[in-house]
Length: 171
Image (cartoon, rainbow, N blue to C red; front, side):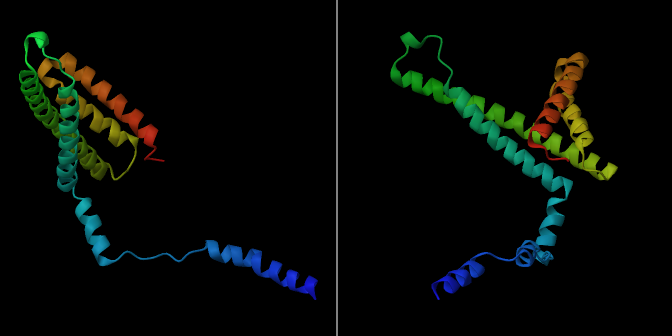
């Protein structure tokens, strides 16, 4: 009697191979209308660009605050504690605003170009990232001249591909 009860317990604990296959197969759920609308909104290049600009600006602001706090005044020994605090706060504000603008422009340009190229080519691959990186790098360094724009293009494209491969978005 004890042997048969332990056999029954074993049968209830170990699922058969047919039950294991059925548990792995799941039904496909169709997206709701709200999910479809949200996807359509996010597929708009203007929405993507603005969102990337806002996120880039926020990242730039935080980096500016951090890097501005690391600046030491040249005449630190001659300044009082209050003067050093005021100097550091001004540096943080200036640095954060500058970095926020730079990263916002970088985010807008990169995402807009990538989105437009992706829609024009009707493909989602690394080529879009290369083109977007090149245009972004060239745009960001264009004020320094054509040579700097070319170097910025190549550098930012290479950086974009490296990040793309690191995160392995396109397979």
